[in-house]
Amino acid sequence: MISVSVYKLLLILLIVIVGGYFYYNYTELKIGSYIIPIKSDSINQDELKTYVINLDRTPERYKKVKKQLDDFGLKHERFSAVDGYLLELHDTSKSATFTGYDIKDGKYELQPNSRYLIRCPNMELEYLSNFDDIIKRTLTAGEFGCYCSHMEMWHNMASQNIKYALVLEDDITLEDEFSKNFAELITNLPKDWDIIYLYLGYSPGKQFNKIVFNDKLLKIMPDNLFIYATAGYLISKKGAEKLMKYSSSFSYPIDNRMSQALNERIINAYKTKSLYINTPLSQDPRDSTIHEMGRNIF
Image (cartoon, rainbow, N blue to C red; front, side, top):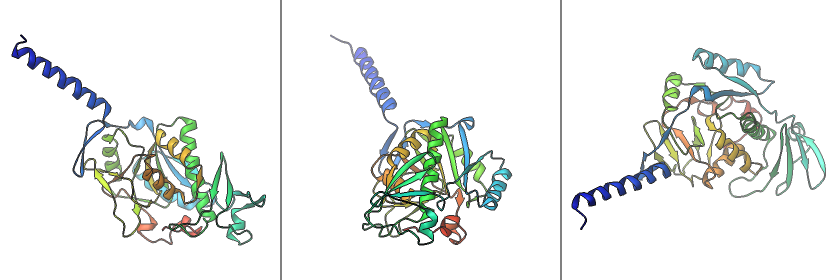
């Protein structure tokens, strides 16, 4: 007969094996509306690059955000945004080529339920102007430029093998404790994260589905209809590659396309519990280059 001590030893061994399997194969334990992190991750500052997306024709905006980053001692690079007015577009049904300026000036009108090719600097995208219950209009030149800008940023990460990037648009304002809060944030990240929003809006009147990860992060759950804003986010190379592949064909602005990727469980997204940055959307919506170029949030 096997002694009691042997049974205990076998039981302990079984617990260790099962516990080890759980630890190495699962990143979190959900209890009610909370997540207990089983495995966490951190980012070495040497692995992280900070970028400010800025139009060449708006140097004053870059100068303003550069001063903030310099004051916080944050090294960064300026990333040249794609100007939607200068973009070349192609109407596949008419074999016609035109620019964003032509859209702005009313010389070329985009039609509903049509297919267009958008020629970004390093890629060609497919825009399907499908009208539905969410969007009942065609996109603007500014929205095409914004879309290409973020796609080009993700392409840059993939081609340059940049592991992590903090991506900021040029009309943001950093909160007073930004440097301290961000440094603490990146020391305790969930293993499964692809993108972390530092600022986020969502459809008015809709339930914002989230689960608490820790005292700084909420995990955004699918089925939020639409979340929006690309003003500031932390993204991994893995997340950038997922989004770039998913977003090569689109009908909505870039932030809404990212929201679709979340709702279809293509990416894992989180948001900071406190406000790290402010944007014109939370201040004066007129103080935005994107707004001036005709972008609407819905």
